[in-house]
Image 1 (cartoon, rainbow over the protein chains, first blue to last red):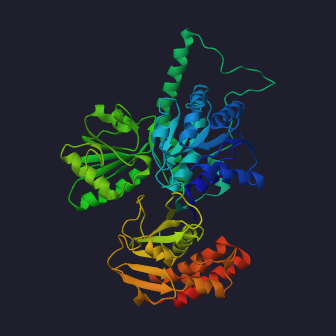
Image 2 (cartoon, rainbow over the protein chains, first blue to last red):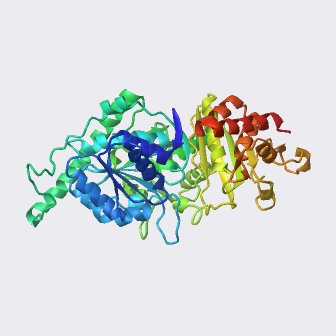
Image 3 (cartoon, rainbow over the protein chains, first blue to last red):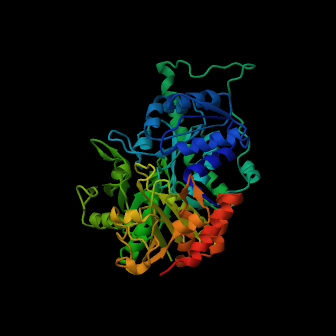
Length: 369
Length: 182
């Protein structure tokens, strides 16, 4: 058991996955990930090409180039870095390259704000990246290892983003069990790409696709994303058998007899577990479904009569991102909370639950209190 | 049993490091889960900063700020006039202050403990750029009120700084552990 910040843990997990190429540009609150990786490369603990680029757009472009030669790659970013990268984020997924990236969630400015907010990564929802949201440092570690296995699976071949809250996790020390390198190597053998750029055996990729065929590319991505659900579950189960911690698309807590089930991601979802305990003490049948995977959206697992969705992201002009993805499913109440790192404690979540019971929803602390 | 601790210090005094050492020692002492985290704002040397720690024998699901601490640690008495250090502290809580004054000198709505960490640092030549290192003695004193062994604190300190620096900081922590007054 070691104790360290989620960023250092993320760097350690990336190191243990043995990427051949890391290309990154620093941005708060992600910076300590790539600093640590640079240190690993410098002191010889990690045998990788570390490419210092002039922007996040170039960081992803370098990962795309490297991944196309059939090797494992890693990068990390946050907020404006991810937004600057956006074109290449689409590119990586359309080229079906199994890149793994960490996004440390941070609000978008102006006004400048370095604190947690999911709008950066949730704004990439249509790019074709698998998105995993971690709620603890242990899960950050475990998810990065699993991310490579998921991304590189022949049924998937899509990039994976592992996201977690800036500062709330990124700079918080928590205990983490780190398996031995040999066990990680067994779980995650060397990547064997289905195809690669190879001067001995030339192929082109990223070429023009005429209207007659473009839809097929998008269709196959969508099919891969659907198949990814099973792969994520299988990989999470296999990980559990080997390391004692299983993962799925969602994590349910006291949902069986629940009147209302709270749906949330990342740090708010961890805090919500405490809120459910408090609500149960008050005699209220609360439950929680922590959404670990946002893409592919596991809506078929969220079969609850009444749901309370807490969003740390807003689609301006529509409302909470997650809420609007789930509201068609029935009796769904949505709260927007915690934007720009505003503290969301269990007492706030208890309050949201009680507001939903009265049929209320909206911007927590502004429209509803 | 969950214990929540808030550290008040000035940028450069090592409040965040203190929280990390405490968390690490608590884990060594057999507590099941711990957290240590800073509040990140506009940090700069000398500005008031806060750091937080949680210690529990169960899994900690909390990810929010600590609003009702069990113990508040004040690394610099100069902060008492600019920061409401007693904010939210539990009635049966404690404020631990780095000062040469006795606890009776302070008027807070909870118990007060004091230890002269600055003098301990100077006597032990525990100095960085001529400035006394108070964070490790304060963690040593704090251990007493959390039932954490001074051995675990010393071990956590020595893991952080190898060699002489580790030994000196560990000694400073032990002296403070033995000298703290309530």
